[in-house]
Image 1 (cartoon, helix red, strand yellow):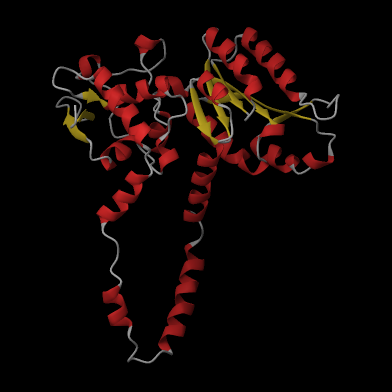
Image 2: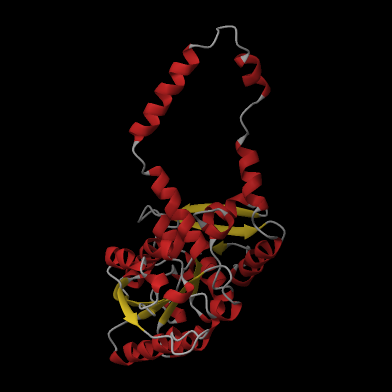
Length: 322
């Protein structure tokens, strides 16, 4: 999901002119890697509009945390028929995330009436001029024309939806993020944040059981016969997750922006990848960083260059097969 924007493309971020001037460090933390936005883009005022008919309720926290990476959500609304009995469980979720529910009755059975309400509100918000971008959360292709219209008006449009989202809506956004990816990341963070006391208690119970075993157990032989996988094996598994068409997309993009020696700036590569494929995200392939993903591919050579004046590193890469 790298999102490296540049001023020359009409979007607020600096990229090193001539690929040698000072700028953001090339080794990014999680938020910068997933969004690849500078402080200017993070200060955008965002309108987050959510289609309750096409969004899983248990992903709301992850969705709002992801939206906060790209800017400050000043408008947070969710649209649905709240008189329906199957939406009662939404109440606590909306209160926890300060999301305003907008009532839209289902006038006809089998018809999704929230789409028109979201579109009308989006245009009202656009002409009020109090936001810099929109985050449209839905898996419905009916919002494709809305995303296009908002971008024509100079708005930044970030889409979020499930992997079943039609390609038309995905490519109509500046950036599209899969809900399954951000939900998995949230679950990993929650597991890592669990109290260590539970783990310690489990270890003590395991140790107590182990003390009852005989000293002549065959654990040494088993340990030797089952060695831990090497680091290379792990890298190889990750590499297999990157489809060949994605590798080709990266190679073609490197060729498009490379200098005479074949070197391309990683930040500029991220910008181009997002322009060519808005739903590109390293997390889709098991990586948290674009740099980590590139390193796992033996096809590319990476060079980290340190700027003497700023002591920041800029990552460059080139295609070995070019």
